[in-house]
Image (cartoon, rainbow, N blue to C red; front, side, top):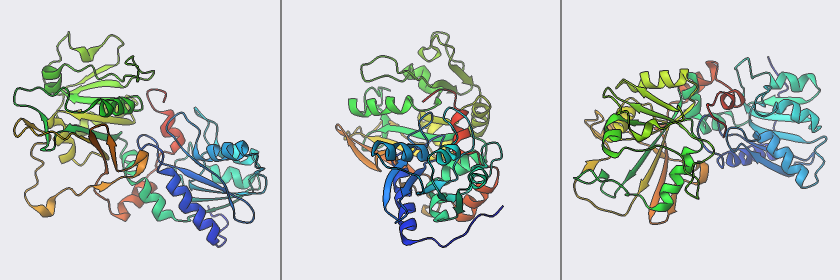
Length: 378
């Protein structure tokens, strides 16, 4: 299906760049990063919006809301957005209808949404008399969410790997003690992440040594409103009195050492965003299998000299095989100071452009449907 392919003005291109930048303010995970900008007929940027995570307003609705707060009449304006507006009713209404109701006359988006149940936003807009054009800065929009496209095309959860380590890459001392390598500010940040994800996974070794609860805590120390599914991966039994079992029924033991098998099982259970916390064997297993999309490292200014290393053998024998990660500015920046620690945020080694394009063409789930399949409200 083709839509109007009118030339893009400098103002429209600049607006798409602004939308791509705005999208980076959102968190990576089960939903893609999406940004939107509303332009006046004269090309002035009137309002900007972005998606803040599952259960929140989509970027298009957020931009419309911002315009209304400013008292701006959106009738006859243009919306520039990084992803095709959704046509799906889930925890939020369809963006296509919100655009129509706002009287927006033209929509320019970067990337098509090919998934039939939630796609069709462009068709709905066109049928309502809205002029629709697609493809502006498509390559940049694809790269913005390349890991998300890869994850949903493979029908597996988006995987965040979390490491709390010393300067010399140790996650525990020789005697096994590891609480607390990170400072209170880093711990609070990690609990904030736990409150956004669907599931958190550790190995049986971590359970037997540390006996973690794997709960998400609010700033006051109480339990957060949303709790992730607590997952233990490994062949050893999880003790009946292990803290991770809890009393709420949100515990899963995956008796496998195969990370792909674990992801398949969790995906079938509705998990769309998984955080892997350790220990060393589990972290290394996911990295060696190239199944990590996002890396978050809390780096403490501490030296141990010996103890448990953060990672084990990844099967890399020469520098040419090294995993070369890239800094990620999404969700607050690539490098942040948290108390006495550094928080490092990285994206997986860059995929080839052809891989990204193929991912998009293989029935990629839209941002609306991905949010509706999450196991808990965010």
